[in-house]
Structure formats: structure tokens, C-alpha cells
Length: 290
Image 1 (tube, rainbow, N blue to C red):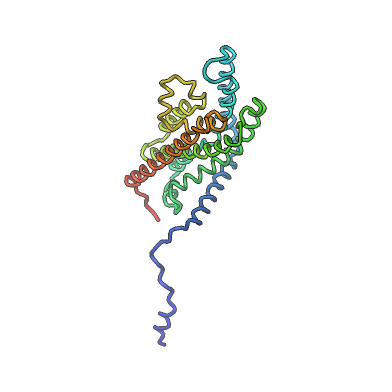
Image 2: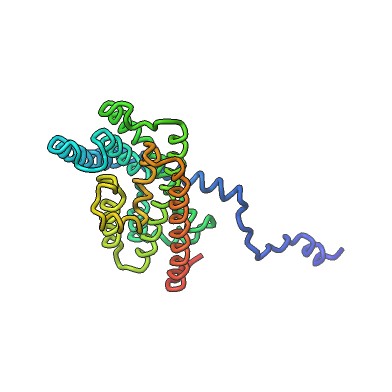
């Protein structure tokens, strides 16, 4: 064997130009790790998270005090009794605390810092990347919601607990679907932030619609007919009122599948719209680098 032949025989094998896509197991592991890291990061700034929760809790106490005064002045102001109203308000606040995500604020901060490019290039994909962070948010929210549940227990006793195991199980299913609806709405706000110079305007508009039409301040049955009709055509009621009502057994069991299908339809529809919007945004913008 000549020297040239020996050198050629020691050449490393050519590197394939094809990129291997991560397997499902690798993607699932990356999703779980990212969710855990997001939860840890929120707990790192636990004082800020706790202050936000306390301030929201204080604001929500105003709703309770207002409705208590309403029932003192008029024991029957509508179709909901005093005890039902108090139970609903506590559960609605707990549900809202769990499914409120930091997706939009985190994204706008990363845009401002110029870090969003790395998010777009991750093998996990942009939507799963955002959803993993949303799961991390929800995990921390559950931890901080537990003390609120204890306060609710002290305030109204067993009134905010489900009447039976069926309502409890269906309530948890509805809560999971409420997370999907909340995430899908937030994901659409993220797409708008790509296009607009600032996403704060549309973010605050979404927050206002959520406050009014989600059933956070009162069950929608207490709303005027015109506002209730508008709420029925918006997804926000499926974030708060639907899981709260199912948990409390205020929805007949025969009607629960229809409510769950409504939540699923809204979540899938909004996620599909968000995916289409993302593709349109990527055709407009270019990510340079490697």
C-alpha cells in the first residue's frame, strides 16, 4: 500500500448533510425539561410572582365584598343564590389563577432583548416551545393556588368543593381544556406581537375582554341578555365559567359533554388559526444566522 493509499484509508467518513429530526421521545423529554425550567425560573422570582398573586387576590376580594353587599341589599338579585355565588366566585378565581399564563409578557420581553431568534430555531418547534413554557407557568400557578384554596375553605367551608366524584373528575378535564383555550388565545397574541411594533395594546384589549366575558366577576347567567349573547360567541367563558360550573355541579351531567366539546373545539380552532398566522408571519420575516 502506498503512502497516498494509506492516507486515504485513514480519512474520516464523510458527514451526512441530512439533519436528523429529534425522535418523539427526545421531543417529549425536551418539552418536560423546558416546562420544569420555566417553573424553576418563576420560582426564582417568587417574590414578584407572589406579589402579583396577592395583588390579584386583593382585587378579587373586592368582587366578593361587592356581591356580599348586593345580597344584603337584595337577597334575591338574580338566578343565583348567595351561597352559590360565593362558591362560584372562589372557584372562578382559583381556575383563573391556574390558567393565567405569562406567555405574552415573556415573549415581548424576549423580542425586546433580541432572544426570540433562538426560539424560532429550536428543533422542538415554536408552538411546542411556547406550550412547554405555558405548562411550566400552570405548574407554578397550582402551587400558589393551594393557599388560596385554604382561604376559600376557611371563608365558605365545603361550599367550593364538587358535590360528587363525577363533577370532580369532569371538572379536572374541563380545567385541562381551559388551559388549552387560554394558551391558544395567548398564542394568537404572540403572533400579533410579531407584526405590531408593540403587542401591549392588543394584550390589554384581550385582558379586558377576558375580565368581562370569562365569567370571572360573576356567572354569565347574571349578565344582561345582550352581553350574555356576546359572551356565548367568544372563547373566554370556556377559560373560567365552564370549568368552574362543571366542578360545582351547576351543569347537568347530560350537558357536560357539550361544554367539553365546546372547549375542545375552541382550543383546536384557535391553535389552528395560530399555526396559520405563524406561517404567514414567517413568510413576512426572515431569521438569519446558523
